[in-house]
Image: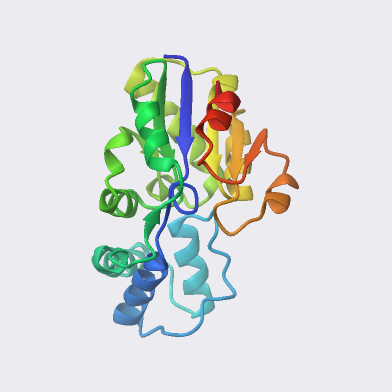
Length: 225
């Protein structure tokens, strides 16, 4: 086992059809009476903790662990029903790609996501993908995305007993923040334009590789292996 794949979730593996935003608005409305626009907050590639802090700052809500828990509990309570919408889907090629990777004894795959672990599990379980990821790094581990990648690398080592050389680690995501957090651990980065950033926007951040989506499995395996 000498290859480690660390996957982002939203915009990379799945599109939730606005479920995350709907559920978050529920948590904010139910617990804090907040129902105003969040359009000025950049959600893409951020952690749940970072996002809630920015929202609380905007609406002058004290950022305490109690308030954070109230917001997130409301969000998680609403998320399963929100995911049951016709626009929530696994992105092209992903399911087959994950299954092929899981059957390959020379590699292991985990998550590197800004979602809290419970949110990640809810989203991926809805689509039958959670079982592919025996470990990961989540917003539970820290507020800043760049602080998560060392946790993912450590958990990969704990899970497999293998020390993965940086050049044998790929971080796969759809935002510049995914590219940046991969560089923190010296990993290679593969950016996919299936989220809110175009190929040109991602290319400006010079990932090691770039794909329009994950539908071309031959192109993916040629890159990572």
